[in-house]
Image (tube, rainbow, N blue to C red; front, side, top):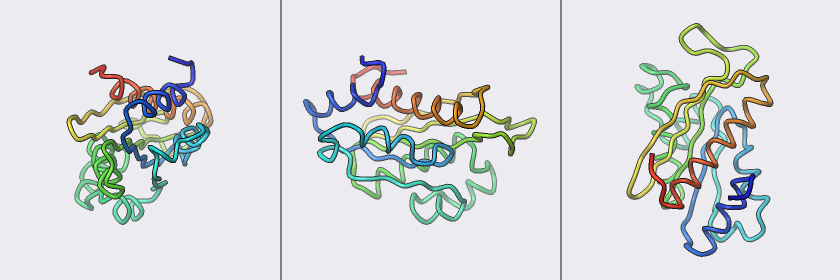
Length: 161
């Protein structure tokens, strides 16, 4: 795989066309930026959402108010609901979602700066990974985007968790 997973994803999707969509919070559109750097991506990437606020998560990707109240925006439960919701919004085969605390503020002892959840919802699988980065805001965003793209590549290439 190219060191930039978005290129490997593009190569896979040219051969096995599927629609993929993205819902981002802490990465602020970085995943979509990287996906759209690939020529021809419109064949497999119809769009996505940056859903930073609770309201945006509810309105655009269907995260339940009860989920946000019980688990918070930065949680496994919210990540998978975001992935399911963006997949549904675009009638796509795969939805990826990222939610976390990029920093440098906003962390708590239970949910420190750098904590991120990445969800994947597909027609035949669902998976969430948790990571906790130790860099600055930009580094945390980059690492989160890279991890999300690698998770997507693993799924598309038939690797399982």
